[in-house]
Length: 489
Ligand SMILES: Cc1cc2nc3c(=O)[nH]c(=O)nc-3n(C[C@H](O)[C@H](O)[C@H](O)COP(=O)(O)OP(=O)(O)OC[C@H]3O[C@@H](n4cnc5c(N)ncnc54)[C@H](O)[C@@H]3O)c2cc1C
Image 1: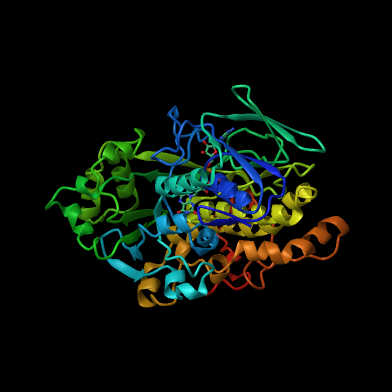
Image 2: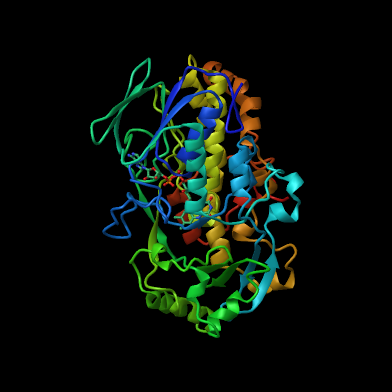
């Protein structure tokens, strides 16, 4: 093993990987493949990691165009996404510069708290999670997290080329050639495509029509100093220094999340949104769903500086094959599996993908790299598909919650993304890949039996589509997803 910046690197595999996309999935894959002995290059079409996530310098014409950027200024990365953080001491320290336990709570529109708790993995104790060494921050600012990954790539000497839009990839028996829009060519043994949803790169792989989910997310993030002293909205911030909060207000067919934190007060609000929707429009929509909103919440909306990101939630059905037939091109992250934000799992599953592909490539080596990507795909598909589906169920549970029942029994009545299950956050994707690789390879090559065990214990996997979910919801049939296997802690 060699050691750079405190990171122990496995012996060189002589295997070259080009990662397309410097999102959380692509950068994490770059780090993990490097650590496992691959030579790695990253190509990113944007000119830099944006303060808003992965926004390119060109703003979209309309909020329906999701091909240019990923919104969501904050995301949650539970323990299964940070199992390998410990192998990068500087990054491990960087992560811990800014962490706090955040309470999660359910509120009525009128400002009554129905239930307050902490995330399952906090309640159950860090030692029982997949990353006992990490003090998980419930929410991280996306650009902070992505830049943390980028900084680690730079420290390790992994080239990240910005302004390089991958346009085409050609696969042969011996490797791949990736061509960029500006005509550069990169040769590699494997291309990992972490290009997010709707990029258009590799149109023949893992592609299903983009569908409207029928819902939209409106998001804004801004420093707390924006809220005027003495205003009703300031009431919402009064305990934020001692206890950051993730509040979910539940209305009929709507949920509103206020994430109230202390970690952003630099006054630079201009970075935090793009001009898409007036806060007044959102207020009107809130009143369409409930007429008794807490005045502090409405005042909070009124003080949102400028406009709000309006993000039409689009969707692709689960696609089982994430690799080219030849196995030298593999998708990861959102490019392989689209998530609704209500799944709370897109970024963490992208990280799990990254860790898994790194370990599979190490085990397969240069010779068997095309098999390694197929093993990776097999190990990951069912787990991500179930979590994708949970986005629909979580939304349904939140939008049609029986608040009286929760209030009467707050200890047992977990709903939506409050109820994830130990199978999600106690999973270690690296160990899983190590343990399952040979068995899965034998299954793929010889047809021997193989069963994934990174699912809820006892779960019987059922294929599904957005259409089947919509049909079920239209018929007002309850989902059995969270009773299929054990989803408890
Ligand atoms: C509103 C909202 C809230 C969310 N909240 C959460 C949450 O709380 N928890 C969670 O886990 N997930 C959450 N998600 C989901 C999460 O943001 C995504 O799943 C995650 O960002 C996926 O990462 P990725 O690296 O796969 O893709 P992306 O972050 O989309 O990155 C793709 C990258 O590829 C680049 N790219 C695209 N095409 C090319 C090309 N041809 N050549 C070169 N580069 C290219 C893009 O510019 C981009 O940098 C949320 C999503 C939304 C919309």
